[in-house]
Image 1 (cartoon, one colour):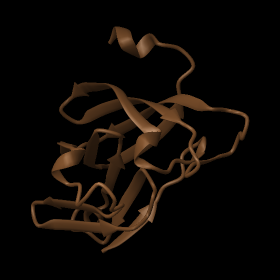
Image 2 (image 1 turned 45 degrees about the horizontal axis):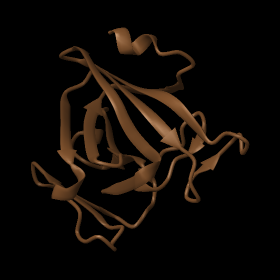
Image 3 (image 1 turned 180 degrees about the vertical axis):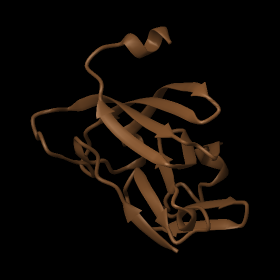
Length: 145
């Protein structure tokens, strides 16, 4: 298995404290939207260096698997940036600071699915889906969903 760091439309998002989950919208059993606040820190590399933060939506269509974990359940130690996720015999180990990664070579990705792991401040989200999108949010209409 290989881990690929993903770059969003705002740039590279790094560091566990960069993403705070604001809202998760399960539209139906195959479509999920995750709304987040993204804060610029010294591990991020935003395309627009003048921005301190963004509101974003991560969209998942054709979802076949979704899990939300408490970060502390997988934290090796307070001083170690190594993330360990052990789900259905999947073990992901990485020294990357990326908050959004795709697992390449898993049984899920070999079946033409995106296998995405998002590391947020308090949570780790793992999703296997046919389509993954990310976009900047300019209003708060998603809070009325």
